[in-house]
Amino acid sequence: MINLKEPFKLALQSLLGSKLRTLLTTLGVVIGIAAVITLVSMGEGAKTYVLDQVRGWGMGANALEIHPGKAEMSMPELTLTYADTVAMKEHIPEIVYLVPEIIGKGRIKFGPTEYTPSFTIAVSADYPNAVSQKVTEGRFYSKAEEAGRKHVVVLGKTVANKLFGNSSAIGERIKINNIGFVVIGLLEEKGSMLTYDMDDMALIPTTVAENVLGKTKIIEIFLTIENEQLVPQAIKEITNLLVKRHKKEDFHIHTQQGMIDIINNILNALTGIVSAIAAISLLVGGIGIMNIMLVAVSERTREIGIRKAIGAKQRDIFMQFILEAVLITVVGAIIGIFIGTLAAWGIMAALKMKAVIAWQAAAIACFGALLVGTFFGVYPAMRAAALNPIDALRSDV
Amino acid sequence: MSSSKTKQPVVTVKEVKKIYRMGKMEVPALKGVSFSVEKGEFISIMGPSGCGKSTLMHIIGCLDRPTSGHVLLDDVDIDELDDNSLADIRNKKVGFVFQTFNLLPKLSAIENVELPLIYAGVGFEERRKKASELLDIVGLKERANHRPSELSGGQSQRVAIARSLANNPTIIMADEPTGNLDSKSGEEIIRLFNDLNSKGITLIMVTHDQEIGDSSKRIIRLKDGEIISDQLTGK
Image 1 (cartoon, helix red, strand yellow):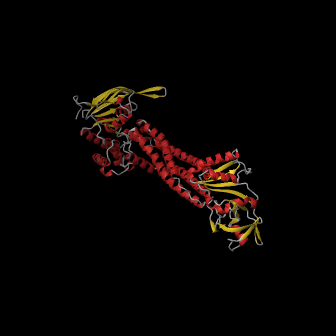
Image 2: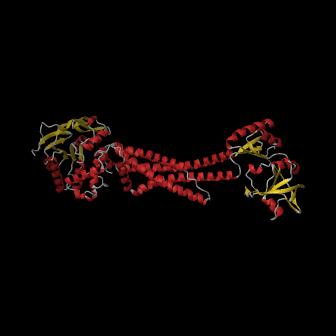
Image 3: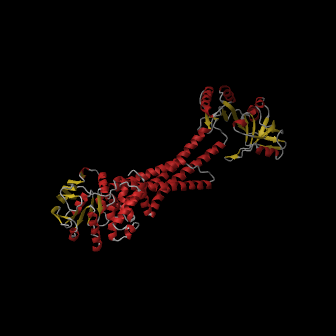
């Protein structure tokens, strides 16, 4: 019988004939599938959440950061210089924005009020564009002002509040380390990141850093490359140029993609391990199917004998039993996906994250379950099919 | 109808031997049995328990294979057939009636009768119709939807007979068909067999009951795996 309708009906009949047993066997598959779906969906959700956070830090896919020293060194020698940045801008056409950062301490005075922000940072005029920093009031300094070593400053919200309270800061004259500056802009509030107050800073042109902060060493360089595709090429060119200038590779270059890759790898590994554990429960479910099918075969030996005596072929008997196993698996898988999805949503909602339903994982889990059901159904079905009709008829069971 | 020598035999049994192995011991159940059955015959195979009559019936009915010798069914040597072809013969050429009825308890009477038709690949409508006709023949049309547990022994055996007729078999094999029945039900079953035989259906029946045996046309007696007599009853 190539027609599957009759064996399908037979399988359904015998499954419904022992409801409790069918239910418990199905439960094994349901738990297995649900566990896989829940864990993978939660893993994907967590990954999306973490990556969104990383992207929120302001780097774009076409952004680079150059840090002095090898990546592993915590206190590197600061070897990057202003001349390096000038050379980069001159020789590497893919660079759109370049922002060297020189960080120092600036004691700010406004009349009788005095305040020292956490960071007084010398950056280039590209800064707002390179790190997507908006200026809410006034403006950022221009390239011309930077080149002209103008004493202009843009303040973070915290600094402005400390010095000016609620009154406007724009146009006010202040002193930084006793050197006169004009406040020309206020930075958009950034809040805090990793407990640092990102608004507790004052930005001044790179060109005045030496005078005001007494420093010329660059702590890091932000770069924006023309587009994402040119990033690998730009990295190569920058590396070549800096190695040529420094005679050694005493710096390292970060990309957003690099960070994302690392985080991705870690989270994928975690999801993989957890899913593998869940897959074990699927395997256990499959063994449950095999167990119950073996019981069914020996319980129904006489039935098999009768069916064979009246003309059932091995194939007919095999189909009947394998379809029982497959039916249990398919129904279990459908219920499992449903429960797994709900559980993933529920748990992630409680964690204030969003589950990403891993349809691929669901498909793989279902395929796996079907494989498990078929695999563990084959042996009992073969045993049933191979029974000698006479022996089966004589069976007292 | 009586056996006539001009007719083609439907079953030919030639030097059939069957030896069972019990560990290291060899137990011969049949020691070389030969006879032939012609169309329209009604044969009883009789003998004491252990004489090999059930074994012989299982071999003719393609449920078991002989250790040596040949069985020809409609001129086909069943020795040369694989398991699937044997299943096909059991389905289409042989109808079985067992002492213990062997109905499937979860199926209704009509579903039990339909079973051989399912394995023969007959579609639903057609097999419902045929099964219904067969239940009518055995007088159980109004019990079509009852389960075996709701039927008496005699009724169950009649359902089994209807089932054995489903694919218009060449021969009906009955193994002690009255063995589990009271004498009244037993008589009814034998009457049904006689009716079927008078319609041209060939029957082989195993029994140890002389009275039942006498109701057939020919009696083959077995003892210790050998035929000791083969006589017509004169019916």
